[in-house]
Image (cartoon, rainbow, N blue to C red; front, side, top):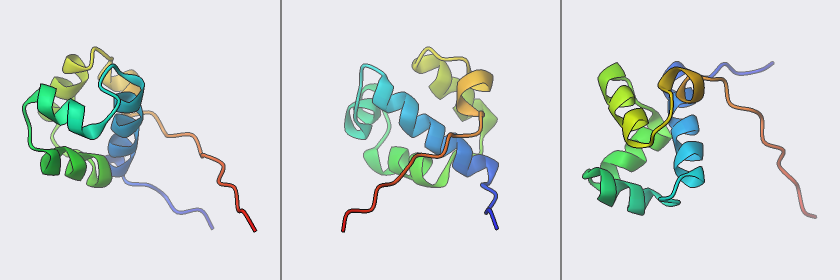
Length: 83
């Protein structure tokens, strides 16, 4: 049985991916440059964003299209089990 992700969680997961692929690379660098506390950015990445205005502002800051990259369903990452 597959668990459905909430839209907030999808946004948070995609934001985390987009930050890693951006010039900022880390939550800390992004938080500093964007002007928010690391704690706030961490909450966005782990719990998601629920404000469309904030999503649009972050997407604009990162120079991405919010509808195309922030809201898309994340691809399942394969996890390896080392024994």
